[in-house]
Length: 136
Image (cartoon, rainbow, N blue to C red):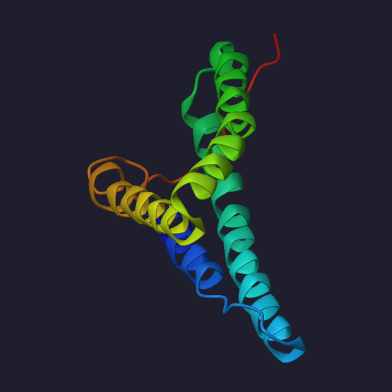
């Protein structure tokens, strides 16, 4: 999970570095930057999601699973608020400034997760064994 969170910042940096489109050749170069950046971002999400939810389900008691998944859904639906706010930020401060804020935020979150949360918790050393769950 720590590795995936570290990848978010460079993925957005790659998209922000896409050159301005002046002719048909630069259009393909810009598209390449965006596609590769999105690929890295999606790769990071693909690593993080299953590991995070698997860990949460393993450590959470069965009777609290529904509440945990509900709060995760609410967290993920924050995109509905964040996307328009990000667009307004880009419109008001210029695109490159908004991307810089995004890159800084993603990078700081990745470093924070790596250094504080993971280093001082059981996430790094947990070994999942077969755990029998009873359906109630």
